[in-house]
Image (cartoon, rainbow, N blue to C red; front, side, top):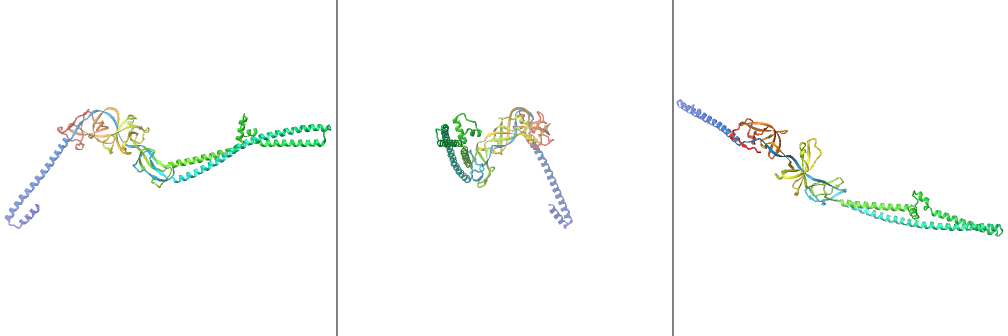
Length: 485
């Protein structure tokens, strides 16, 4: 518009003077009209803005409701955060070192007690077992030989005892012959001295006497040789007490004279026992090459694959039992006195929205955490279908069973701060004031006020973003919420 006016003014400079005056007068009128319209539009817009602001404030005030602070009787409860934990966790390892031949499970598989988890290679143990069985057979044959020697030794003792009896009888016979010959020689000597016997006959008799004596001496030596190991002094030399009967003496002499054979037999028996133990041990190890689940649950992790070498400390897989689970929570030391075994705990988990689960407190840790000043408790519940998984976040409430009176306000009426502090908007004489308060626990959508408000005070119940300190509230625009007793 301004450019058109300038071009028109420039064109008028070349016109006659009366015409130029008429044109300038027309331009002045047009300019004044434009300025007037501009000012009128600006003023109108400002008025609309102010009107809009006024209308918005009125609408905000109309939406704001207030709440009368009152004392309510409530059932005390403890709210806590927790998480789901497994009831039982087992790391599956092998008692047998060797190569992992097969593994039959994967993460997330459900397993029952006795299910085959993995297998260790059997060939080295089967070779060892075959060798041990051969050694056992050799030990048995050696035992048979030692037993035969021992039995032969017992028979030899019996023969020896018979020989001793025979030698004793022969000694008695030789003694009788010698004594008889001794009497004859003495009698014949008297007869010879009397002249009734020749010298040659006497010498012949003396020769026979000497022969009889020699035979007696030989028989006595033979008996003594036969009796070695079967004498009373031999029993005493072994440190044994002399038996009272002949039968016990014979049994004791048998024991003394079969020490070597008996020791060989016992040694052979020990070798058999050792070989049998080796066989049994290897058979047990062979059975242990099949690793089975000790519980019913889920495979939480698989740590090894087929072909890897397994040691005694190797973890093949990890199983967890979640047929039942625990809800683990940390409770402040000031609330410990309110917790007891058997209390019910209701909780929700994010995975199932508002669905409520119920558990029962079973375990209370007897040690206080020095850093957090809390005690861990665990509540147990069944888990059919494995719906609850370890690690799920839970929001829990423990009903203590105690009832008391509390000053409560709506949760939406308070802006929470730190260390149990908060702020509400107090309404006095239709003016909004910011008020600091000290807050306590929550009770079904209500918040406990410990300090800063009195019974009967009116506060803004919600829509706190629409109010500010010092704001004037029209009395007719307030929607008052009734106090609930």
